[in-house]
Image (cartoon, rainbow, N blue to C red; front, side):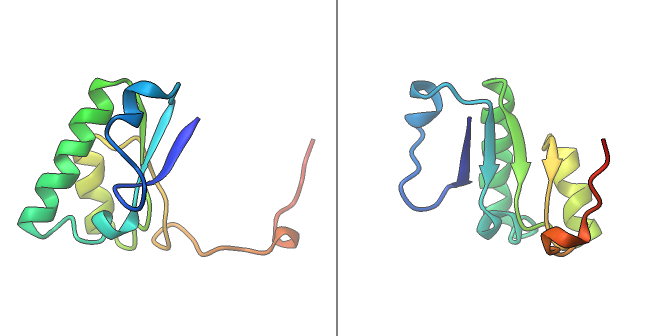
Length: 97
């Protein structure tokens, strides 16, 4: 189970221990500002917290190599965003068995 868009909307720190979570996806609004000193503190804190709880940590909205490198160094497990590829229609994928 994952919490998507963590840090925005109705997400709460209390959910991290109340739900049987496997994954935490940090909202892109934090990811895109990781190079701003105050926002980096938030991202670093979420990374330490998620890693301490044994959760897989995903960064949403990674758009450049600098951000990818920074997030990897901070302990993010998975990165997603336009830096790696744009959304594709289902027909663009080949299914092999």
